Length: 486
Image (cartoon, rainbow, N blue to C red; front, side):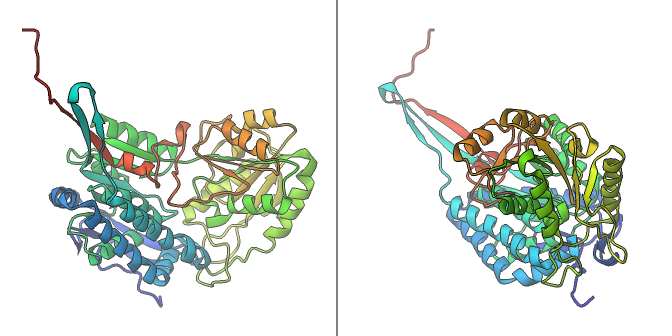
């Protein structure tokens, strides 16, 4: 390879790279070619203990710093990430297979945004004074939870490492982050940069591993908070395990989100939204609007324009800045998606576009569109996590809203219409945590991100995240004589 993808060691603990080759090997495969580009090792019990000890040991000193001091370090790390955006984006592309065209604007930069935002917020985290009759008063202190564990997904490894780390550290917590075993490389760079920016050793640690390592961290007695980005089945297991220890949790899980296109919508804008909500990151985004409900009056125009636009997708080498559609993250994920495509055809949906694996090296699949999809089809019920769009017809607003909400999931939802009152009425009716009007999948750090129903608990980003990485201590101060009945 022309770029150094092999990290200095598998783990980053207590401010330094740490290796233990007794752990199971994890091959890092470049999805564009199927080549092994790096190898790390899963954390042994000794590595897990070392990471927890490092995080616990650093926490009190980190919390004792002023929020302004902590924030300065986070903002410095943000600046370093921006300076190194090119090399971090190249590494992210090797890790995930996502096109450089995308990683260079949406991955490390999003992580930098989170560190900058929460770095700026850290000095403003305060309690409040509550005056009571007679001169007594209460004050609150906002305190860190302690040691936080972050468990990442493979679709946005750099971003997730920062989305979880930044609010945790701003509040005075320390972090142990376990990346997905599919994409283990980028979080190590985040940890390295934080130390370079001045974070004390042990404040941000990275350990590699499969599910057993995540389970060991989640159930560890010295861990106070767990934040997971992953699938609903994994979320249920992790939530239950964390509940055993009464640990704080944030669960950012999957979805089968609806996107409603009314017949007064700008068709090109709606097609743009559908492309962003189905084919960006080769469809591997938890909030994707994969059930596209198109009002019957514009269905044919929508499908025709969509097919025209998909012809403009540049599928190829992810390192080529012209490439706009890359491979799936792994052969396993490709096979899962191919299974759903076969099921869509078996169940009678019309394959309107794509649907085939692209021959050659790597895990490439055509952007795929099914039309004439009905609500009971598997491709309309289950999260596929690949570039497969299901287009469903509808007639009226009440009907489509009921159908849009008829799912266990509730992560995201979008509506395209030029009727502003209808737009607000529909989003008020969505059973989803993150909604869009005439747009889709925007995720600025200033806005809360998260789901309802089975799609998770808690919120990432924005001031709302502070509530999930800190707790309030209430202090009652008596200024008047105290009385007792005996």
